[in-house]
Image (cartoon, rainbow, N blue to C red; front, side, top):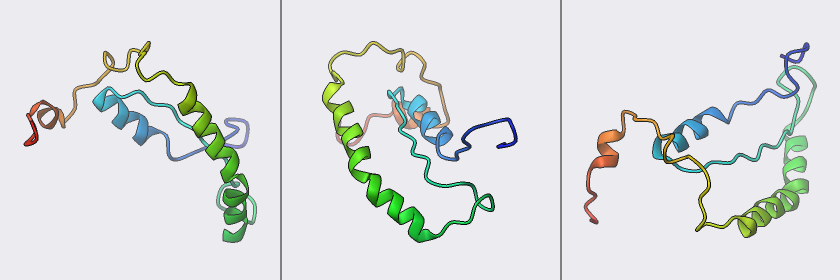
Length: 99
């Protein structure tokens, strides 16, 4: 993919988006590129640890600032309308034991 097809290749976006769509939930992703792919460039677990710990305050601030600026009472998206019927539809439609 790095040979002219993509700048970044990741593995953790589709499951979350799909599951959010199942329940009609709003979804936003914050993806953090931390290393070259396996076999592209030599790296160690310590390199990864250093990146996460050094940048954790920045990521935390992005998340907190986003939460501060999102109005939970105002929904301008179509997430509920875009909900897909899934194998879990019977679970969603059942009344829970808690009412």
